[in-house]
Structures are given as C-alpha cells and as structure tokens.
Length: 147
Image (cartoon, rainbow, N blue to C red; front, side, top):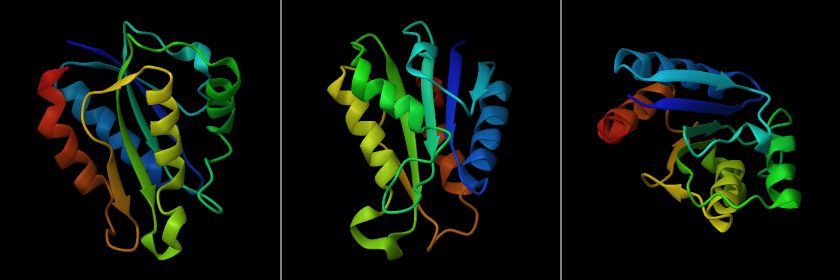
C-alpha cells in the first residue's frame, strides 16, 4: 500500500471537504494518508504519492495557504522526475478563462519540474456540481488500484 501526501489549497473549505473524503477512501483502501494544508516544496518526497486538491480564488489564483508551495516550485525549481501525482482543480466556469486556474498552474509547474501525473487532472465546476466530493471520489476509485 502507498503513502499518500494530500496537499490542499482551500479558501472557503470546499477543497478541504473533498480532501477529507478522498483521505477516508484511500485509508479504506489500505493506504496511509497525510493531509497538509500548509505544504511547502520541502514536504515533497519521491517515496510518497502526491495527491493535490485545490480551489481557485480571485482571477485564477492559488489559495493563500498553498501559495508558498507554488512560490517554492517557481523559485527553487526542484527536479521532481521521480515524483508521481494526481491533481483535482476546483473552480467556477462562470469565471471564463480563469476557470480552475490554480490547479492548471500547479499542474503545469509540477510537469515543468519533471513530476509525472498518474492520471489526467480532474476539473470540478462549482457552477455545475453541488457536491464536488462525488466526482472526486468516482475519479479516485477509477485509479486508486494503481498506487
């Protein structure tokens, strides 16, 4: 079974709720999970799987609690080639071009630094989905056996 680091970027709590649901499901599957809402690049480990759940704020911005992590990636540029990850981007398509901007930015940064996504990014539209944990859990169950 895998050790999973679950990094969360949240403003109003929806991403944290989704992360808690995912953590419960992963634990039921026998995985060990650590949730981190104050992540930094130094918290990454190639021996652990990274699951990232982030909402989007402002004009496609990364939530304040996850901004230091993104800044670390931008400025320290750690080489992450052994790191495998999966990412959920949450947003509202009513905001047009900035929809899921935080998740898209983080996904791009991770890949630029060599990290490899296990599965394509999941984007959850708050304008269409009242219970974001439902599509998140369905997505997780589709690939959790590959950990």
